[in-house]
Length: 152
Image: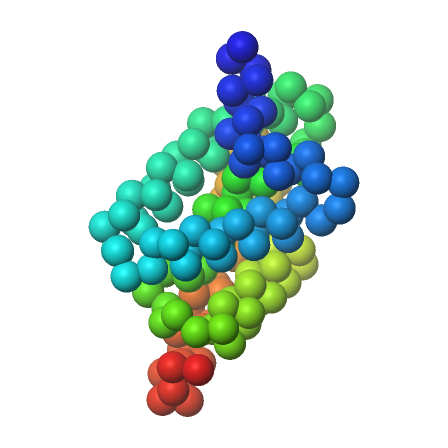
């Protein structure tokens, strides 16, 4: 029973078991959460915090259950990273898509120091690289919006 709960959470309701692009699908679910919670910043912070905490609590356990380092089925890290990437950004389709593709690029290519953190053991390695990718994405999009003086 406990292992099934760990799998349910770490795979973000089994999205991580999708046969094609589970990380991207989980990131898209992060977009939906952002849209639902946008403007309700107390809830946004709370949901982001809970998802991140649950990721830290389950990702390493799922790694042990799967018997592989950072298994592809663990996607709660992508959801947490996306919510961090969207923190405080305006709601518009250009911002959504730019943020999505930038986050996925940072996550897939492990831009320094994401790759270093990914090598950490268990949940720390699984979660931290996506959290850093989310922070990088947010900072770049925030900077771009300020430089263009537009809200896209």
